Length: 137
Image (cartoon, rainbow, N blue to C red; front, side, top):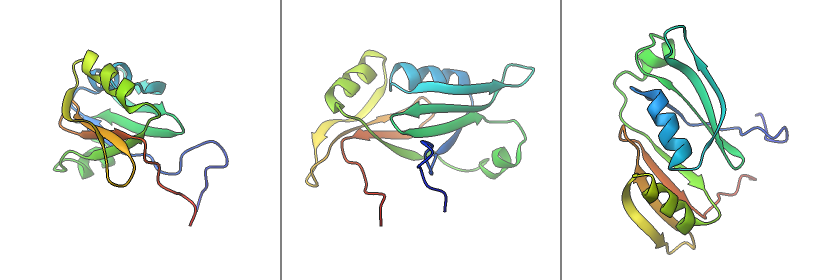
């Protein structure tokens, strides 16, 4: 199995959005992701984008492209993604300042993490917290 020694994550959640450009704007402005790459077709529709946060990444694109992945995801529901952040309260405030729908404010968990939960404009659930799973087995 591929590792992350190259500085690349070995797992990348992938989401499709009806309005991928607006999703990129929300994820960068409200949730602090940075654009690594955005590829558009000749009509300006996002066919593939990569956004990074820390040493992780999420890939996304537009619904309705007719790609094999688009067809496979056609009847899929929203997804949930967990992102590790250093300062949950500051991250939460940024999301609030940019109008994100907050489902759970910053909360200390029994397992030692502090997290909050938000919903993006198309129903995906994003959790941000201090817990980082161990990747060595």
